[in-house]
Image (cartoon, rainbow, N blue to C red):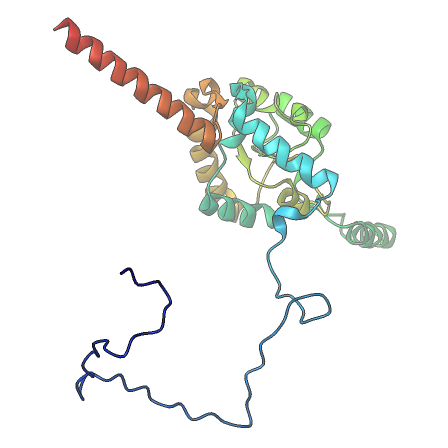
Length: 271
């Protein structure tokens, strides 16, 4: 006779032995504080407020931000010629700190400072006292002005920004510096150069002369930059870009692995 599942046990059914005293599970009772009751939150409609989560991937960013990011990806993917790729070769942080410290000493006058100086010189000249002093030494800026200084070999050092937009404004400047044998360097951040000359941005600045106490520091910087930029042939020949995405890299590696495996099989068959 087949016993149906779920049927009540018969009177003659065998009883299992009880668990030993030590084997019985003892659950410790946790004393509950009546002041603090567990209140489970409900996140349904009209319920508790949902916790904050990172929605960066779902944000509709402004158009200029999307264009910046797309341009950055394109520059990585496409093959960049050496003329443009040289602007990725910049001075390091320590060199930039030393250079900016020197250039900040020769920051040009503001409009108020210049007016005050000219008034003072005019008053001295009218009083018939000592002749007016020389014009103060300061940084030169403006592409046309810097170009004239380089062509006349009056510039001692030219500092070019790496993120000028459009880059065609300054892509020819390193070649001109090399031809005229003027030391130059490329630094990160056009805004940092702009701060030196009281502007929002500056594509390039040049220094024509310094005071005697800073001459040794300028000579050392020029010597380093000549070897790093002017005489560096490798920078002028190196192409940039060609960096594919992580998915493309994995796909390429998979294809190369399959080709190598097939070649190994062919070599084994030939042997």
